[in-house]
Length: 387
Image (cartoon, rainbow, N blue to C red):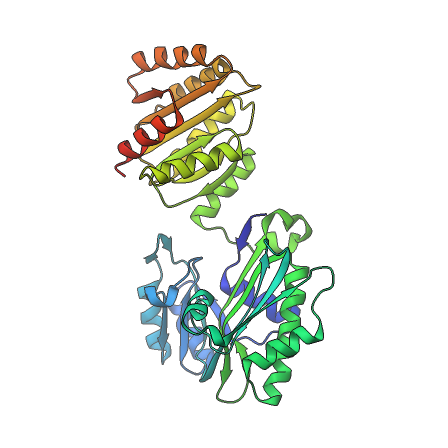
């Protein structure tokens, strides 16, 4: 399972239109003029929320308020095109500013250890659930829901009781929790988080912010979601890899990693991290990778702008190392990378494979380092990347 996060405005739209969750009025703007027009239409102070898939948007300054259409246009011009945590702001969700009486937290997530769905509520919201657990654990309640038996009335009663709401809002909260659970199951979601769930001065319960992660391997059951999903730069690389038949996850380090086998790839990442390096990706080319696959995989790694060195950790089992080496040579000859490559080959026909790589390395003019062990390769890669 791999989670795919939906943009906030899409998640809100889905929860509102399909499941009746109350959300602030708002629309998407891509220009300052559109932001001003939406603010004018809403007729009250607004919040301009950058639609980027990162946490801590408020603290980073990616969420701002405006009290008039003119101010909304000015703020929008400052946010659109700006980069926060590596993500460019291309859209703003302009929504009405709520008059907040209280902030609460309601979330549902998969608990793989317990093989259950976790329902988490807190009488205090507006911060990460981990932060709530650390600072105010007495305000947090976590319930385990067996996926076969589903959400029972006693789960809902206990959760609502923890929220400490007056009767009218308690009934509303019960309905909300049932709706979120229904959405969790029907959408094959991994996480649905409403934080904060706002009790307004007028007594309404409104989902002020929503995070929704769906399992992208279940998208074949949700064709309607495929058309609304907006991929970020990192998602785009992962999508490209998926189309190539590769398992790739972009990370924030500078050591590109290529290995054959998921376990080998994870072990390589761990070792690089252990010796002081920072993995830039997880990439498993699978067993028996052809030269064409290796070439595409290397091209994919090099697309990551932060990569300073590539560490290829290959175990030749059924696939012979000399065949793998020929594939690597073809790929490097075609791509002519400008950064160093550290290559470790071991297994069947490894001496032949190493000989092919070393011969190519001598006449290629490329920075290729053939190493004997995984540890040696990880240390050298970390060193070449500059830590």
